[in-house]
Length: 91
Image (cartoon, rainbow, N blue to C red; front, side, top):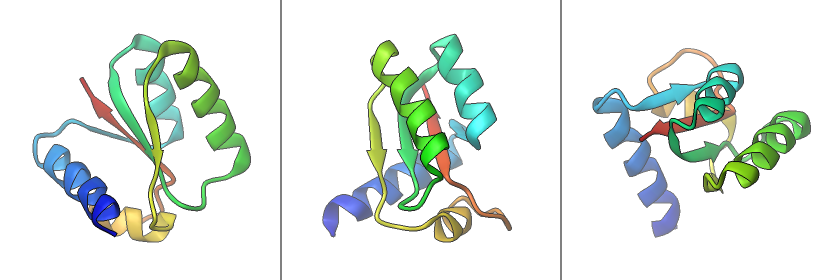
């Protein structure tokens, strides 16, 4: 589980530095600009969300990782009161 804990720590660190992009539309917009260094998916995103973002990220060369936590817990990690399926880390 250390890898999952490292992922969460990376998200929290970048959240403090204001380098996190939250949500499908915002991640896709930033990805199209080439402004993301990594993308994290919750363990249960919709198939369309994961497919669309993953395929575009693959073309651009941006790495994606799947977290071990569901979208409700990812929302809590990001200190939001809603579910979050995908977050991106800005370059």
